[in-house]
Image (tube, rainbow, N blue to C red):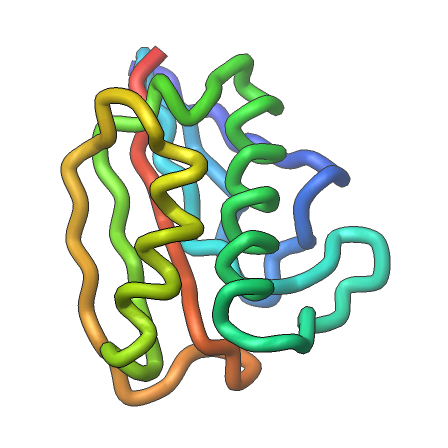
Length: 126
């Protein structure tokens, strides 16, 4: 099975030694996205809701680069720096996964890159 590296300028550039996504066969593995504006490469301020929305828009852009949508997502992982933000992030998340939501994990972590409040990664199958 051939591995294809996915990159789009519509999402933030990688901030480390990783790819935005990797496609292997019909499966696409998206790296975790944080609340970075793809135009400015700066962190979005304004609270966890605004950050969650930016994260999901970044994921949407990477999915689009491989002709996928949120309907193709089979698994998500949400990382929060404060589990008390679960409800707020869940409300934003539900707007993007309104029908047939994927399997999901959500955990609190000690800290996230660049001090953000939320990071989300996904796996999609086309």
